[in-house]
Length: 441
Image 1 (cartoon, helix red, strand yellow):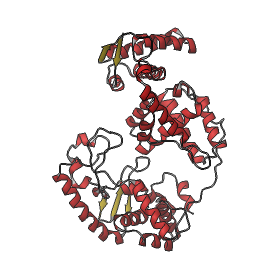
Image 2 (tube, rainbow, N blue to C red; image 1 turned 60 degrees about the vertical axis):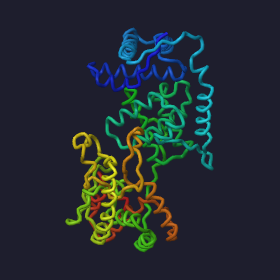
Image 3 (cartoon, rainbow, N blue to C red; image 1 turned 135 degrees about the horizontal axis):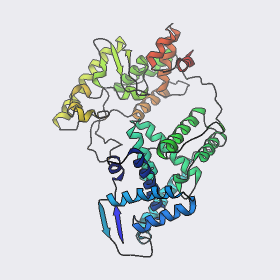
Image 4 (cartoon, rainbow, N blue to C red; image 1 turned 30 degrees about the vertical axis):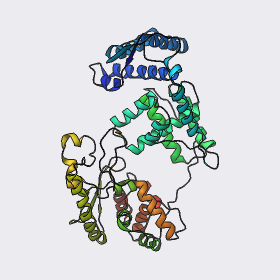
């Protein structure tokens, strides 16, 4: 019996000379096949492929032309596979004899995921890429969803959120075929479950809807119909938490060092937490008093005025950061991460001063999207900044919900209270619709 190994089949298929529609058909059937192999715990062989096609014919009753398309896809997979090896025929699947330790570890991982709950009984779901890979094996559909999100240059936070929702949908369905059995009707049931059983907010349910529609339409290539017949979460009017000017002063007085500068910059410019953490040297124009926000939410850029009171602290901070940058260059540390394909267009730009982070981490770390990449200097993580902000709010005895976005809310509210035009505030915040800005009135 000959088994094959084809770990990079998706890239090989993408670069093949096949027509686009044929490539997409092949991709779907190959994902089905790999998911079937994982569930049945058997290797990729011609026999397992024949069994898989027979299983589809028995369960789905397809037309002849569909069977031919499926067969063509698997034929391409076996024909282009780079690695083949002969193994002795055996009645039991190989993983049954070898997998006592592996299966036990996997079961323990599943148990760890399922047993983690909040105090009120709700389950805690691992929804970061690293957590999912560490706790449970990645289904081919997850890998395909990840590939498509990266092809579309979707944000890493979006990638984490969508994969987390897919994991929750799979657990809700509780089907032996996993996400392969997930369809439009199941998505509507899951959305209703979120509203009725878990009582989520309308925004949370909308995010789950976006993740489900992306998976069914873009990954599974399904034609979706009307999505109005599910129970919608209660759309309550949202009033943002806002600090008074006195509370802002007490909060900032209790922050020190770079954390204080980050908080002052976020409040003084109305930045999101990701925007302040990802600032680069080239985005700060001290002479003109401008701050440029690049590739923000919705992949949009904007320019905001830089408060005069922050220019001198920024100059002193950048002098300290320059020494860290110079030390990295002497130590031959890889340059800062470059967005999209700029590292190929300008391979040395990541090591230049203007591309360095305004708020870099103290230690080197790896890109979570490329675990095999060398360590480099990344920007400060949002959760590290958020932790210091929460501690300062507690010390300042502010009796309100504390998070970094409150500073952005306060920036917008104080501008409107001082007589600024709502359209001006809309542009400074980077809102697409003025209705979003009107919550601060």
